Length: 341
Ligand code: SF4
Ligand code: SF4
Image (cartoon, rainbow, N blue to C red; front, side, top):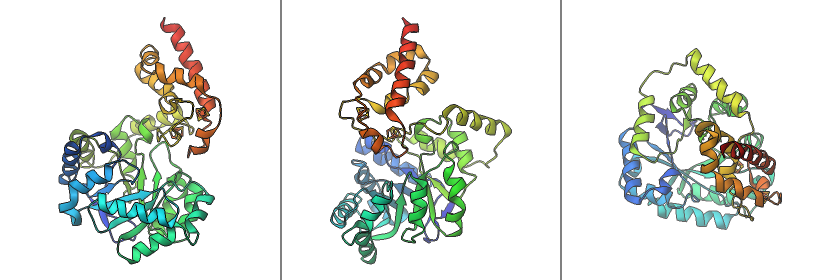
């Protein structure tokens, strides 16, 4: 495992980090085991969030005795100073620490969000105060909207950026990578598997390892998966012609408008199970139509309750035309159903 400078923060982190969502579903003892195993295998960077239920608390329990050996990043959705201060105190308590290495503003999707953060009673002023008090070492920004992220980073308030980056979602590489590199912005790559649609870990990390300054944070929920990913980093990185062809096949198959399963669109007021229904064509392709009609019957039938209210579309950071996609997926589901009886 190599250790990489995170921009100009002066912090060094392992070349692959640990995304804190999947440990939510583990019992606390198991989560602690997994987290400590990751640390034993050389992973020193842990990313979590106030909104990931008990993820912060599990990280706190795993590492309270090793606090100076790990770098912890967490995040808040709050845009107001009071809410920010409450979230920060909760994170500090759950993580059992007196400081957060990188505190990030989660999902700043548009200019309006940024303006809220910058108000005199906004979270940015509170974050700067917390920095002066030593509760936060560095500030980070997270956005799925690249043009908004670029404008905000250029204000100079942030030390790191976290953005979706993988061999299907290459906008970051094309539009921001060089700027971040030249200006010492630490780069954290979320969604190394594009929200689960890349099912070839070897290929996913071969691609990302071409950008050694970018730290991917795959989610881990078992010792076995940690070992698999860490072992990928033990070999020299060589991308073959076949690898490039394989990446192209994924890109062709998925196009740009695909669901990353982030679940920001939920809940639907009518009870439509949006995320599994959005992924129907991929599941059908992987599992065969006959299996997928059974497997996703309930989510697909729930799409019939859609009133096209548009609430989910407003929440989707990728501006996906959700109800049109659900409709198209239902037609495919119906055709598979007709052939499976
Ligand atoms: S548009 Fe349909 S799926 Fe989206 S929130 Fe409204 S009812 Fe639910
Ligand atoms: S539809 Fe959009 S918000 Fe919902 S899970 Fe997919 S990418 Fe996320």
